[in-house]
Amino acid sequence: MALTTPISVLDLVHVTEGATLDDALKASMELAQLADSLGFHRLWYAEHHNTPELGSSATAILIARAAELTQRIRVGAGGIMLPNHAPLHVAEAFGTLARFFPGRVDLGLGRAPGTDSVTARVLGRSGDDPGSFSRNVRDLAGWFSDSGVADSQPIRGGIATATHVPMWILGSSVEGARVAAQLGLPFVVASHFAPDDLPRVLQVYRGQFDASAPTAQVSRPYVMAGINVMIAPTDAEAERLWTTAQQMIYDVRSGHRRKLQPPVAPELMPAHVRAFADATFRVRAVGSPATACQALREFVQFTGADELIAMTYAYDPADRQRSLRLLAEAWFSHPLDCSQKVPT
Image 1 (cartoon, rainbow, N blue to C red):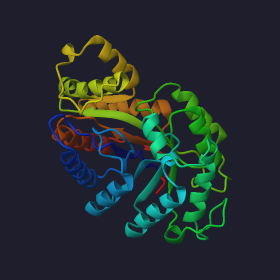
Image 2: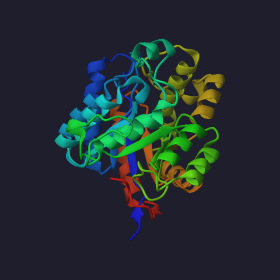
Image 3: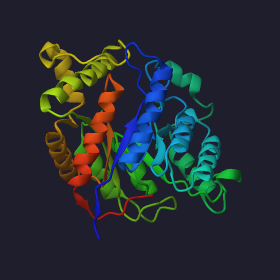
Image 4: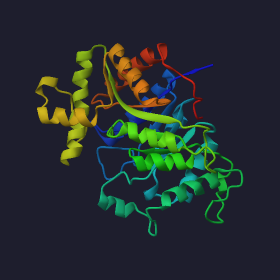
């Protein structure tokens, strides 16, 4: 029997103008509880550093707290940026999480540092090399396996052994897609902020997928695609709230990093800001429930995605919660079918 296309939630723990990091963490955990109650499949946190307007630097700790406060939703990293971490420490941390919350922990792995070059050097591990990512993933697979032994060295995973933590590869480029394919792992494409060359990226992943790889966890390619979502009762209200996201991504481009800004009337948004945001965030579902869900369906049909992960930027946490409620009501009532089993 076909399953419905799952939809999951991505959270960067944004701090809004006039609020604090403590406020952001509180709002994030409230969002986790809401997503759990509404039936979303996963909740993931994205690792970022040296960004005071984000509270998602200690990803594993966020996962632990969110899992403690929820009942059924899968909680994970979207992702852990491996250049910043010793793989054995990642295995031990996520093995511990998997034992506290069996069957609910995901490990998404990224090849980028998730920060600026100066901070990357502070976080970076000495002796690491550009070709180490795949080797590190193979070691992680070994530590999570029944034997608990790394692929490249005779070191045991200890608490990670036999936890079988599901691993995903995150990426936005052909190279990231190729790595995921060669490892036989599910692929999360960052189409919500890097939509360029998306068809080619997906083609490479699906065309080169190796189900016989020792690290393979799925029998055929499985894609989770990122999409920006803002839903309100009307198209006009959603477009107004969407101006917060437009301001945010232009701030990133200009280097003028601010907390999330209040929405403005769309006609007051400078044309150059709107043009840049519309190009960078062109993978989006913004509008009333009917408008947004139509955009979601079209995106699934265009990409063939097996699962979606939604990113919502909102100045007021109440607007983000309402968007999530409206998404759940509309999407789960009229889902699209797919035949691929969802990775646990």
